[in-house]
Every structure is written in C-alpha cells, then in structure tokens.
Image 1 (tube, helix red, strand yellow):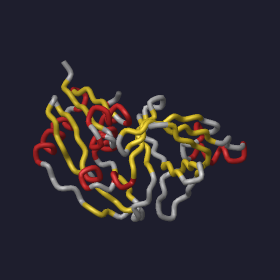
Image 2: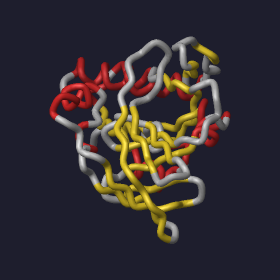
Image 3: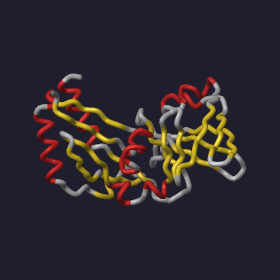
Length: 210
C-alpha cells in the first residue's frame, strides 16, 4: 500500500462518524467485514425488512422477506429483487440479498450471521454511551481507548470527542512514518468475538515492521 493510501486509511479510520437515529426503535444494525451497514427489522407477522441506513433527507432502499424462529435461530428467506430495482439496490450495497437465505443465531441481544461474518446489534445497545462514543486501537501492542465523533440523523455533531493525549501522541508517531508500520483493521464478527461490542466499529492494529 502506498504512503498516501496509508495516510488516507488512517484518516478514515480515526475520523469516521457514526449516525444514530433520534428514536429508539426496535431494529438491528449490521456490522460486517466490508463495512457496509444496513438495518434489519422484524414484525410480528413473519415479515422481515432489510433496508439502507436512514438519514435525514437522504434516499432509502429496502427489500422484504419472510422469517421464522426455531429455538435460538432465525431463518430468513429474502424476496428476489426485480431487474428494474437491481441498479438501485446496488447503490445501497443490498443487491446480494436478492433471494438470499440467512440463518441468524441469538447471542444475548445480538444476532450472529456466521456465514457472512456479520453481527447485528439493537438500536438500544448502539445508543449505550460507551458503545456509541468509544473505540479501541492497538499501536505497538499497546491498547488505547479513544472517543469518536457522534452525530444525529441530520448529520449534526452531537458530541465532540474528548482528547486522549496518550493515544494522540502514539498516533502522531504512526502518521509521521506510516511506511514503517503494518496496519490492519478488524471489523464485523471477528472484532465482536475478540473485543466485544466496543470493537464493532472496527479495531485498528498498527505495529512497527520488523
């Protein structure tokens, strides 16, 4: 990866923004390796909806399917996206759900999709102050917990992160010579299993090359 791409990656990782709706509705948000998020809604009549993340005055797209529960598992069958809607679905990263069959396993309040390495988290959990505000990173095997920018559904900043001098100093050292570091980001189910909910937004690991 080039020098400029390393810098861009760091900026995207550490200045990323989460958007949280104003209402605590009972829905799930996905966290996966590819970083593309969607919402998952169940109703009491066996209908499930997978939709793009709702943002104020922004386009929205969703597809529907059916589901049934069996023990701690939820079995989902999505409808086929017709050819006229396919291009729109692609814009929101939802085209792969056409006729998809999913099996989700309950783990406490979360739902786990092992096949697609995705964890679904309820809006109530996401609005927990610790989960909403904080993330973790590792620099030269040292763990840092830092705060993130938090915005509302209108894209307005609700909270400016507190400074973490130790983390800022360590990160500055990486930014000065990024070509000397190996950088990787763990997301989705892998981050959740290793670091818990605080890791679902992505865990950055930066270590000096040998």
